[in-house]
Image (tube, helix red, strand yellow):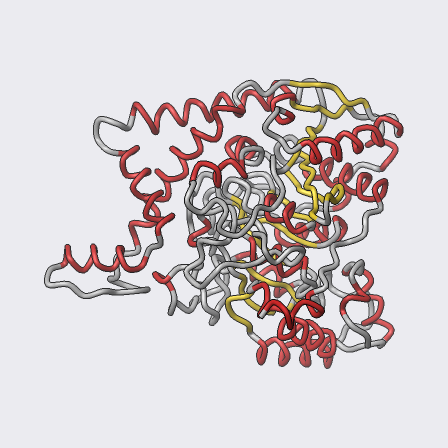
Length: 496
């Protein structure tokens, strides 16, 4: 059947073609990915748990009932799931000691839709604890490493999902994006990551961090697969009151290429400041040059409140986290540390169960919501959020889409920023504003520098993911970049 490395550029369509022809079975495909995980995951630690026995059993069942005609959209395709999304009868730890022994009693809405589409859940991926981080170093179960450079971080908080894709351990993955946690690790690992419009994908079964910001995102190695996955995940859900009453996304919403080449693309000047690595700027400027050659007009726009968005986010998001994480008190589920009084039990449980970064954000959020400080901090942060959203609305009156870097820096070294929270937070400075505004965005690879990938972000109007996908497909075609190819096997002996 061959090694997965030879399938590095395969899409779902390619796998389905081989399955239809009988070149391999679903069970053989699943075993190939499980063997790959066994071979290389000791180096990168992308997975927290695997569901090997059940996924192989399910693969056999699918093969036995193989449809005669067109296969369901994700039929027989393995997928990795970030460990803050509930999968029935599997652990959902959120990368925290607090939930180290929690087994989800139900499926998230997105999981129901994946299973109905024929996808096979291969395992749960590592993450920053409760999705609070930008490097996947905050996991209570150890950090994940970047498959393209084991000394560097994969980004966060969906670093396990991004690393699994980059390391060819799975063809698809789910992440969650509160302030950039799908797009930034996708950029650091050279894969594709979509944050949809707020409300376009149900959050039912996603463990809450900041409810007005959290979204489940689609991750893949190619834009085409991200489209297929998003078609399955999107759509309204009565169990999530924040889910918009929109039908599932259809690829018919993607404009044809000739229409894409007639649009205006905005270049926000605030995203190309002196703080951005010059190699990243140069790579993205080359994309602008290619687009202009195809007839796309690239115009400068301004998003003047960009510099305020990061500070406002770290008021709003921790405030919501403080409220959401109050439920982890040792009473009903999760970790419980005993004490002589109820107050001591609460205190010991939360002290022992939460890591340093989560405690930091809970304290920040509780302070921002406390009596006498609410107006000064939380209310002011929400006002800035409104201004950020208005910036995007005004920019989209000039252009159809915006193009920006995903991050101002390349993947940094493990441990490099752990003692400097502000420097860690700056890794999300270009993804947070769009999250605050609730608009969709995608990260795609637009080049390499010293073998490290460079992420390009495409932002669009609410519920216009079709335009984002259209431009992403065109850029992917124009660049024709090779997919990331980590040589993990050759390093295994020397790294362990």
